[in-house]
Length: 56
Image (cartoon, rainbow, N blue to C red):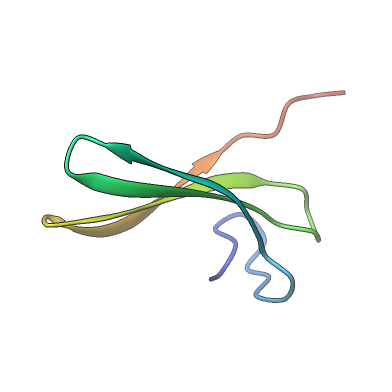
């Protein structure tokens, strides 16, 4: 898995999985930049959607 925000491939952590319509969704967190993103896989193809980080 590759972070869509910073491009990091090391230590990407899987947080949880769920089903959305015909997709299996997996939420990941990047340890380098802290970005959360969702990976969708299903009959219509696979894609990643970055979820913007919350400002602290």
